[in-house]
Amino acid sequence: MEVALYISGVDQTTAELLSNMKAEKVILSFVAVFVGLIAAGVAFYLYQTTKVVPDQTKPSATKVAMHASPTPTGSDTFTVDMPQDEQVFDKKLVTIKGMAVKGAIITVSTDDSDQVVQPADNGSFTLTQTIPDGTSVIQFSAIFPDGTQKTIDRTVTFSTADF
Image 1 (cartoon, one colour):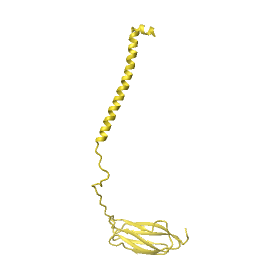
Image 2 (cartoon, one colour; image 1 turned 180 degrees about the vertical axis):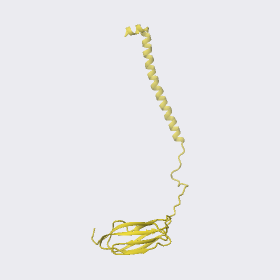
Image 3 (cartoon, one colour; image 1 turned 30 degrees about the vertical axis):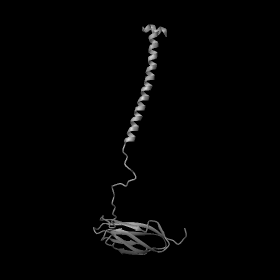
Image 4 (cartoon, helix red, strand yellow; image 1 turned 135 degrees about the vertical axis):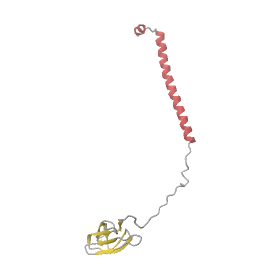
């Protein structure tokens, strides 16, 4: 090592000085990082403690008003609320309920019979239908005032067996 120092023109005391300066730089770097972390932590603490958080216990001033309208508004609105698809009944007489556009003509068809009904002013319709033994398909068809048609099929089962 002494050879390398003498070749480069640096004496041993200068090399020791440089070695000590490197250690001081490392220590100084650690101290600077530590001071920077402390300063960042203090700044974050001050930010968090002075931040205004809205009170979560007070009810919101914004209110949403919801109004349900029983009358369908589309020109081809047609739904069957009862019976549900694949529903099992223990009585042959089934209540049918649904919604359609005022002025529509609704036909309810089973293997045994057909019925025709028109919805009330609010769009609702209700009727009773006798279903055959076993599994059957009830077909609901609506013909709208504009001439379009929509069909809904529901599979229902009549059974007196205990499940």
